[in-house]
Amino acid sequence: MPWIEAISADDIDRDDVMRWDYGGRTYAIYRTEDDEFFASDGLCTHEKVHLADGLLMDYEIECPKHNGRFDIRDGSARRAPVCEALRTYPVKVDVGMIYVELPD
Amino acid sequence: MTDLLAPLKFKPSRNYSLTGPEKDRAIEDGLVSAEWYQTPIDRKVLKQFIKRTDGPAIRDFVIWMALLVTTGAGGVYFWGTWWAVPFFVAYGVLYGTSSDSRWHESLHGTAFKTRWMNDWLYELASFMQIWNPVIWRWSHMRHHTDTTIVGRDPEIGTMRPPQMILMGLNLIGLTSVPRNLLALGRHSVGRFTDDERDFTPESELPRAVLSARIHLAIYGCVIVSCFVWGTILPAMLIGLPRAYGVWLLPIMGLPQHAGLAEDVLDHRLNSRTILLPLPLRFIYWNMNYHVEHHMFPMVPYHALPALHEAIKHDCPKPKGLLATWRELFPVMIRQIRDQNHYIHQVLPDGAGAPNFGPRQQH
Image (cartoon, rainbow over all chains, first blue to last red; front, side):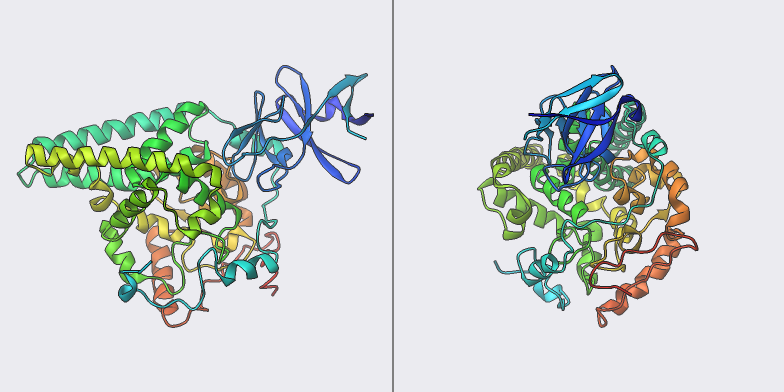
């Protein structure tokens, strides 16, 4: 599974989320208040809304359309109307760049 | 199922059912789960509005509860005299009208930052509205996905033609309260309508059954209390206020979408913001900023006035409550015979191009 260079860590504010498109798919990359980074599929599993427009609260991302929530650490559904978990991906930061490990 | 209210209804020209032909048409035409217009707003500015905090909602909840206890206690104290009337008028509005906006805000999880507070308020306010908390959560999610899309939105309050007789009766809950209680009865034995099954996941239905049974058990206790004590006073405090105190809710709430376009993909065209004085905004928890709420559902009620200021250059100019009804009421009357008639919202100069959707490309 390749590590793909995504975006610069400086592109995301702390406690925020950013959209990243790659290979015809869309992802969300998160930076927590404690400067941890996470990545997941970019669209809510409920109605395919971009999570990058949502609100990151600690380790939960809230969908901007219906206020459903996911845990960004494992993608688990945390609040209705979200029922289906979100796919998450390993992330590492190297020399200021964020790398996301995507499946082949 | 026989509709006992059919003689009181004007016949609609369109099928508003969620399982009828309009649903298929909406899907075919690309109106379902579509991309809606959103006023461009800087992410950093928006983040200020969507930030969660407990303070304002705790303050407003304490005030609300204090007013409920005070007016309820006054009604009980003066029970049997005319002095009880003003107390119950106030109590009824605080119960039957205000609980709707508390239900709504906690459903979105935006009232409080702390999750259990939202969940707790949601259960309480659902009970006060005599709504199944599970079914209505999913109903409202659909309302946000497909706002005023015929065949998809279960919460179109003023279908065409507007059911003016029923609306009049429901100023004191004459049909809505029995309907809500009957719905709880159905849910308690696991019976759901086709529409309810359309927007509620199968996996949620057992929870809906349990909630209905709990709510009915509490209402059962209230009725037993009335018989035991030989007075309707317990029901005047729990249950009946949803009838005698709901009158203000449609006055403020119906303009949210009434008389406006159907089947468009722009909340500026099918939703309406109205301006209200502070006491009414407290009762309604700022849900009069309805365009703003639909466009940005993550914004808590207490930040909606600020959001309104930030995006008003892009939205129709709002009117006050009286001016809104002066415009709306004749339109609703006309819609009884002309169901194609509606109010075309006027956007200000420089506003973003309206998204009329695939059916109404002007």
